[in-house]
Structures are given as C-alpha cells and as structure tokens.
Image 1 (spheres, helix red, strand yellow):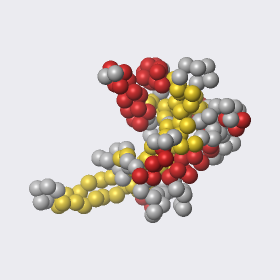
Image 2: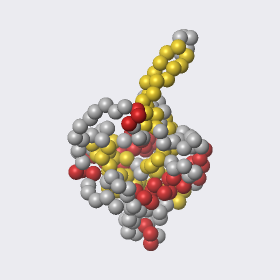
Image 3: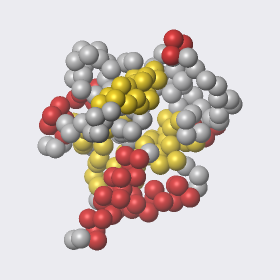
Length: 214
C-alpha cells in the first residue's frame, strides 16, 4: 500500500501530450450537424478505458452510516490530490469500471479498495444499473458516471478497523461528515484551500435546500 499524505503532493510541470502517448484519454474532434443545418466541429476529451458493454466510465459511491455517537447519519468522503486541480480534492469514493464487471460489483470493490469498508446497497442503490447516467462535463468530455448508494454497518467486525488496499500512486485519506453539518463543513474545507468535487458540492447543496423547504 502506498504511504504518504495527499497534502504532500504538488504539481511540478505541465506539458502538451500527443494522443499516441496518452494512456487514459484522448482529445477528439466531433463533427455534427447543428440546428441551423450547418456541419460544425467540436473538441472533446474521451476516455480510452470504458468497457464496450458498460454505459459509464466510472461509479461514484455515496456511502452512509449511522453515527456511532448517535448524532445521525454520516457520509464518507475522501481527500485526494488531483493534478488537474493542483489541489487536494474533497470527493466521494469512486473508480473506473473494469472489463466484465457490473456497476454494483465495481462500486463495492472500489469502496473496499479505497476505504477498507465493506458496504451493502441501499434500497435506492439496488437500481444502480438502471441509472440515471450522469454527464460530468458534457461541454468538453464524453465522461459518464453513475452514483451508487451504499450503507455501511459500523458494528460489523470488518468495519471497525478498515484497511484500504490502495494501488501504487494512490494516496487517499478518508473521513466521515455528519449530513446535518455537510454544507457547513464543505464551505470550511473550501476556505482552507481544498478543492470541492462538483458531485460532492451539488450533494451538499441539495441537502441544504431541502432544509429551506421542509
């Protein structure tokens, strides 16, 4: 398992990369017919790793548990350095779908590998394979993902002292945040210099707006 903190990382340089030298993604030109009838072009990024039988590139895991202290439900988040952001990003556990792997299998595998926790699908998560498919940046990327909701039972022996199995080059810190305090905590982390992943930010804003309309 890789050792070190995400906080120790920093960008050293940025240079152009030719498609033939790219391992994970390519820049492509799309030719399309616009509503005015004209043929136009568009530039976008496309991952090279999506299995042919998968509707998405990756899954994002929204893992929750009941607080051991009785303060209500908590959500599991990660701190991970992301070179394009140049910062440590607050995000959900996530990962790319492997060949011949279902989306549910991917979600539970990635959760175990990145966090050490063993989870089970919630009633909402059981329909994971049906979508909806989420387009993370449709103006610039083919990237598609799916959110899978998972419950973690903190009383199970395997969840009392979880041990992640990180890949070479992965440096992830996991932490729990109360759903009641998530919006406030996200703003605090942002003020401290962390980058907030869009999915986490939207999730927190969604919870906050429900409080206004209760």
